[in-house]
Every structure is written in structure tokens, then in C-alpha cells.
Length: 335
Image (cartoon, rainbow, N blue to C red; front, side, top):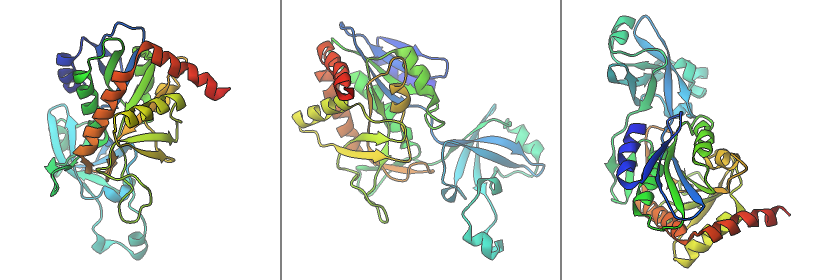
């Protein structure tokens, strides 16, 4: 993924910035003193191979949070030293489950990956080894309403694509923009720390998906097709008050429809970025997405377009003086 992002960023950036975790950014240099960081994340939820049985079944552990009930019978790709190998998550069929087992939630330790072989030797012959990464397999589809797009890993293909396109269209000569993606967001947002240390931005926007709550059985106000989300608070971060006010003022000025949400049980990279260096004013902008942290997810291209319009408008309005004001207002909120 780092190599792929590099291929997209190089044609639109003045130079490329990387850290030792694999995070990668393209930079457009401005004439002023301040830089803004736009950070998607390269990783997706997945698994890691932990054991191979004598009968050729593969045991695994989570990389990122999965709800086990959405995992059984899903197709996967194991990336070994000889390339990609398709598999499927297996478990006991319901016909042989006892009464108590049927009432219990699915459990990862009871699952395995089946690649369609008879022995450990056949698994090893494919190049698969303990420690190899495993990712969901799902084909991209345009849905009945062509604005609705179904694919794996909108979390966070969305943020990666938006970072590239925002950098490509950016033309404000004063502020430097550093746009790209970090690694390891799904595993406690580790890459955001090293990336922030490398980039050293004055302000930062995490680009990540949000939750569409307008589905049966859920309560909330975020709806696909109604525009990008400005995240107020998550489990790790309170969006920077003066920066958030600036973003919402820009949205109002340009008649860009936005939604607001809060995540009590999740996080984005904004939290670790905000705690880096001396503290970096940060917030998250996303799009409402259905079925995240599963093999498939759905988003609306209108929300993507709205998020891009919002980010572009924010960047166009920023100046060195305005960034100074946003940072100075931090102390007003704390006093």
C-alpha cells in the first residue's frame, strides 16, 4: 500500500515524506511558515496467521477490532512470500452445534482459515508462514442507486483517496500542505505518532470514515448522502475547538452541508496527532459508512465529493495569520 500511495502522490507533490513505519505523504510547499497535515490511513482491519495445523487449516488472530459474528464463511486473502492465496473462514456447521453453542456468540479461537488443502506441507508450499497478513476479499460494486458504492476497506480507502485528490487540486501558495496516509491506525493508531513527529504540522485533519446511524435498529442522525461528518469527540480526542469552529464557518460560508457525530467507542488518528510534539490542533472529517469493520462496507460518492469540497475550501481559506489565530485561541478556551 505504501508503494501504491507513492505512485499516486509523486505526480502531484513537490516531494515525498516517509517515516520508518511505512507512513507516506506528498508535500506541496508554500511560501509561509505553517503546514497542514491531511492524514488518511493505509491499513485496514485484518488478521495474522498464528498457526498451521497438520491437516492444513490455518489459525489466526485479529489485527484491529472485528465483531466475531460477521466473520464466519467470509472470503479472505493471505499474502505469503509467493503471492496471494484465497481462503475462507470456517467453523462448525450449525447442524452439529449443541443448544448452548447455538446461543453463544461466535468465537475467534474456534475459527480457522481453509485454503482447500489436505496438509501442512501443502500450506507451506504456497509460501504461507506464521506471521503473514490476512485481509478480507470483496469485489467493488456499484449499487442500484449508482451513488452507493460497495467494497472492502472504505475504512480507509476513503481517506487515502481524499488526501491524494486534495493535494492534487490544492493551489494556495502560502500554506504548505502535507497529504497522505499513516500506518497502523486500526492497531491503536501507532503510525500517527511517528508521522506527526516526521511531518511536524501546525494543524492536522484526520480523514477517516464515520458510522451511518440511519439503519434499522440504530439511533442517531448521520445519514449517507447528507454530506461529510465533522467528528466532535471520540474515545481518545476532543476536536480542537477553534479549528472546528473555523471548519464549520468555512462550510457555512461556502454552503457545504455537514453533519456532526461523536464516537464513544472508537477513535481516529486525530487523537495521537493532537498529543504529538507540543500538541497539534486536530480534528477528524469523514463520511457516513455502513458495515465498517467487516468484509464489505458501503459509502455514498456524494459524501466523498462533499468531504473533498470541504477540505479544499478549508485549505483555500487558511493563511499564516489565520493559523496563528487558531493556535492562539487554544489558550482562550483553556483560560
